[in-house]
Amino acid sequence: MKTFQRGSVTVSGDVTVSADQFWKLLRDWPAAMKWIPRDSASPPIDVTLKPGDDVNRLPCSRVMHFDVSSGFPASWEETLLFADPQARRIYYTFSGIPDGMRNYIATTIVDDTGRGTAHITCSSSFDLPNTGASMEETNKFLRDVYEHVIIRGIEAAIKREKSSV
Image (cartoon, rainbow, N blue to C red; front, side, top):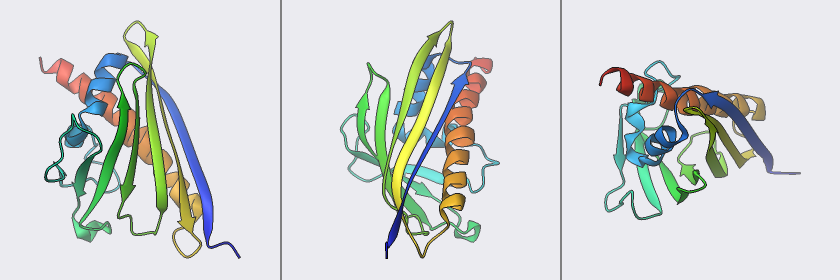
C-alpha cells in the first residue's frame, strides 16, 4: 500500500502590471505582507527573514507567522532556493504545514506579454500522506493561494503602490 499520494498543481493568469514590476515584488522575499490579501483564508500576522539570511544570498528563508487560532501553526518557513532574473523564474519550498505535506517544490514564472502586462505561472509538486488532508482539499488550497494570493495579490499591491504615488 502506498503511504503517499503524488500531487501537482499549476495555475496561470494574466496581470495588468509589467513583468518587471511583478518580478521585483515577487523577488523581494520578505515583502510578502505587502501583497498577501488581508481577506485570504488565514493571512499571516507577520513575515520575517530567518535570522542570518539575506535576500541576495540563496537559499534564503522567510518565516510566515500566524495566529494559531486560525488553525495554522504559529509559523512556517518558505525557502527561496533559486532565482533567475533574466528568465524571471524562482524555485522555492516550504515546511511546517500541519497536514503532513512533504517534498513540496514550487516555481513561479513571470513572462512579459508586452504593453505593461505579464503572464504568471505558479506550479508545484508534492507528496501528501494518505492520513493527511485529501488531495482534493490540498489542490484547492494551493490553487487558491496561487490565483488569489500570489497572482492577484501581487498585481493588486503594485496597483495600490502606483495609485499612492
